[in-house]
Amino acid sequence: MTSVFLPPRIGLTLLPVFFIIFLLIVWQLAVSFSSVHILPGPLEVSRGLADLIQHGLLLKYTVASLFRVTWGFAGAAVLAIPLGLIIGWYRRAEMAFNPLLQILRPISPLAWIPIAILWFGVGDLASVFLIFLGCFFPLMLTAINAVQGVPAVYLNAARNFGLSPGAIVARVLFPSVVPQLIVGLRITLGIAWLVVVAAEMIAVNSGLGFLIVDARNAGNRYDLVVAGMVVIGLIGLLLDTGMRSLESRHS
Amino acid sequence: MNKLSAEHVSMMFSRDGKTTNVLNDVNLEVAPGEFLCLLGPSGCGKSTLLNIMAGFLSPSAGTVKIDGEPVTGPDPRRIFVFQERGVFPWLTVEGNIAFGLAKLSKTEREQRIAHYVKLVGLEGFEKAYPSELSGGMKQRVEVARALAVNPDMLFLDEPFGALDSITRLTMRRELLRIWEAERNTIIFVTHDIDEAVQLADRVAVMSDRPATIQQVVDIDISHPRDISSARYLELRDGIFQQLGLAHKV
Image (cartoon, rainbow over all chains, first blue to last red; front, side, top):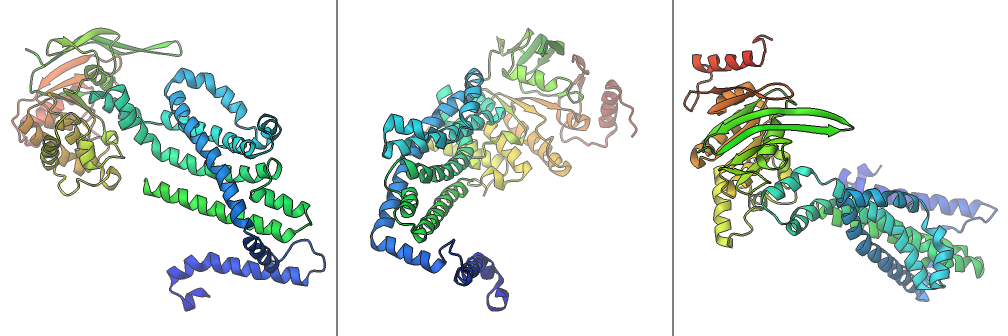
């Protein structure tokens, strides 16, 4: 259909847009013609979104969520990456740490919520801590695997050219693990964005996660619930796109 | 004096309680400026021997001496050339060639890079990354990176093994041209009989595991070698027989 009006390349990039518009129309029609009200329609949701923007809540809550993600994610990166690189480098350290890591890793960060609240109370710190936990283990495992995957020929070549251990780390080890670390950071940022919403539903009174529970509790404003979900999805997409561009610039 | 001498070198690997004898009393002498090929079947231990000579492995028994000094570890005066996979993918051609030149001044470093880029025929590719290069070009980068530090020895471990047969022939000619210009001592590991007879001053023929040096064959033909000459074929067939291979397919 589109190829009649548009060159095929443009038609292809616009295809998802057309598809979303199509789905929105179907959604609106379904809501209008249905007798039971189980979901707000897209028009209601956009009015809700406009409401949020007008009251300045959208910006405030988005900034609050991004703030927590930034600290939790950055804190995990700063600790987990160097630690993972060191553990990956020393075989014995890896053997000692690995079982513990494998036990801690499958525990959902959400399971830590009661302990987070016990330690840090209700507030920013508790949710930052939960995001930190959600990012820490995947990042550490990425760093361990990245070091262990460095080909021996690179290290042998570096030794052959007489590099000191410090120079080997800076000039060979680090550059050869960076591509994998960037992939790990991208995936982990996605996790952080998932965790922040859940953490904000329980541990704080601002942010996009809080917006969703609050809209429901304070008057069943499901238009705002869905508006919050849409915003979360769009910001998640933006974060991922940003990390991907970092990734492609590095390969 | 010998450039390199291997004296009663033996190597055993232990894994899961089983001991494998890889090298058994290897003795070898290499003269300065000589081009020696280590030839043997795959998995016979020739790479292990080369790694011992380069200082990456220490032998279970015996010693390798270079310039009369026992080898205790890798040394920038002797560079090991891996197959093309040894180039650093995060550095450009220039960056790779400059890898061992950190101690030089900027101008000196740039002169060296330019010289070796030209020597291996990579002009115009200085800023290219290895992923943009063919297998043969990557191999040239690695040879240039090795030569740039002015080593007096080169260890080459089946350097052309991953290349197609046409590129392989070109690379052999190039290597000989470079060797004639630089006159480093070269120890070249290969399992290709033709390659050994085309390149080397002498070919050390190794037996199957546990490897010993069966025979050292003098290749008394001057370069460039006519690979259809009677002497070439005679030497090649001699090695075929030495390895116990029938010269028929």
